Length: 181
Image (cartoon, helix red, strand yellow):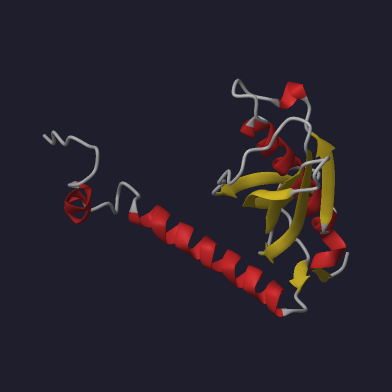
């Protein structure tokens, strides 16, 4: 196995026609179906990079920017943005295309943290990322920053570290009624 792999070596994409069976009660493609496709392509990308079975450890923020219509083509693109020791951050971009007009819409982007597993289910080392351009540096740095921010946020709100006096004043204009005992 290589020590480092380029983004291009692990990049994957899929295109799928959205069918009526993929729709929700509002007639648009169900977000859950898109999330399922996103998880599948993140798995494919991470597995291709690590040459091993991978599991989803977390998904960082999913914003649905534009609805997807039944009958549109949906293209998902995935690439490795960051590599740790056993984990990878896979960037996934979703676009829809109206078949008759050719109009394309960016529907969402998200970041999946995937962990490589060996045949015994233990986390295993992954190849590092060979970065060759400014875009790659930006993506790697952004993923590292997100990881550090999540750790700080998680420890700040851990029940053993939480300081209620810091946060009650921040809640005064929220749709909330506090009855603290």
